[in-house]
Length: 328
Image (cartoon, rainbow, N blue to C red):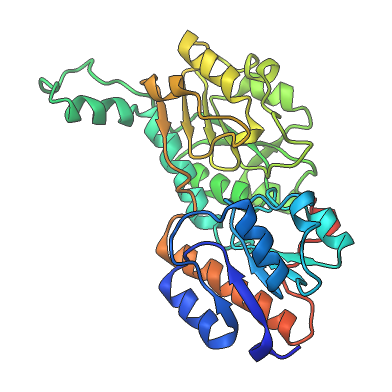
């Protein structure tokens, strides 16, 4: 399949350098407005294209993929997460799916630490005080947060990002604990100074900070359920830079309002429901608009991975970042 004949449809605006390179390599249709495609537009794109380049804002369920044209052979996702794509249906239709793993690791880990520090040191409360013009000067007992060093951090999901968070947190003097589907190799555990908990419940009862770094899959939906959130110490802090669906958001909101959890730093939210407006009202919550991977460098690197996946496929080879069943 010659690259010059490959028809590629991109669903969102991408960094200019990425769009320019795509235009050089493929017969590409770029998005003029930076708004998500409607379902009808996605159906039309999948009927016309050899390759679709979607993002997290595109829900490619079985019904949608079932309407794809015979030409569509690759869904080259712009992003590491692929829980918005029905990969199994795509495989049944002979459509490959690729993603962009590894690119967002360092940026997301930085954001995780920013949220941990922000919530623990009460930076949102301090910023709000300044913005409202209500600060009356320094006080020995004013705006007291907590010290990061010495706190126990429980990492839920010890993949690339979880390990990058562990390295940063250890440098801040935190004690590293983790729960994962599979235990890390002993030498990796030793390097990270990490303690493994086979029981998530047991880990949660002992942690000062819990960081969600696992992907959203059917088995991780509401992994932090109302029951599990109740296991946390009242002084605990919850941080999520992965996927909102991993936490029971309404239960978390209720407990934060009741003072049963000390604080939360959330960069992601449950897409299956509207964002709970009560979260906005809470002074002990730091909310950011899914900024975990939002660096110019990271977004350009994501685009470069998409380009490599499409170019490799166009040359008749397996995309290097193909999503395979063992990842689901």
